[in-house]
Image (cartoon, protein in one colour):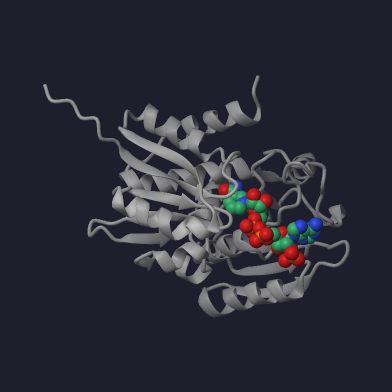
Length: 285
Ligand SMILES: NC(=O)c1ccc[n+]([C@@H]2O[C@H](COP(=O)([O-])OP(=O)(O)OC[C@H]3O[C@@H](n4cnc5c(N)ncnc54)[C@H](OP(=O)(O)O)[C@@H]3O)[C@@H](O)[C@H]2O)c1
């Protein structure tokens, strides 16, 4: 019998990389599905990004993730972009196609939409989106292509908020408006989905809460938070107390990881295995 010792390689380029939980989640999926695949977590500085991508090409990696600070900078080292990555202007998943080209995709937004559609149908929904950074751009573009009617962008800095509002209006089927966030914000009564795509609530500032008039949050609204560490943020806690259906950032992280594995291997991964890997990291017994 001939045995093979050459694994298929994937991984992540980021800086810092030390606390990235994706490696545990994806290697758990590879093991569970008996795939001879590896996911290598690499710390890559901005000045080494070009060489790292060349290295991945030279070694025939099937693909890789890029995280902070490489999501935009990596684009010039790739051979092309998928449709939503092009509109978002950022890439988090690189996929080698059958011609050997490395194509940039963005699974942040689609992972979010997949997690959200497990609790609600986004068709014709009215969305209030807090934030206008990279995560908010990805979420807004994919929510728009998933069929939401309107997105109200709420952001502290006017410039970034207005830029995202224009992007939604110009490049997607949804309509958008902007509200500056410079005090306690009241949610319109007809809001269907409330999304936090800011970094408020992220470890170590785990008690930080969004400045919202909580009387305007009602049980018929769905609340989604992009923060994955911790999964239960003050926003999710408040929403649960109000009786809202919720989606947390860990569900989003698993969904976007599952999309990456699907891009690379063609496999529909068992997401419960990935959830369990994250639970062991973030909520050890
Ligand atoms: N779960 C997942 O799979 C996943 C994927 C991607 C990202 N994320 C999470 O999403 C979050 C945002 O990431 P990003 O890449 O979009 O970051 P970013 O580009 O730096 O944007 C940060 C956003 O948060 C706002 N913000 C930060 N602190 C604030 C405060 N104290 N008050 C009001 N607004 C505040 C910023 O407003 P200004 O424009 O006014 O500065 C901006 O809109 C991160 O925590 C990240 O962990 C999760």
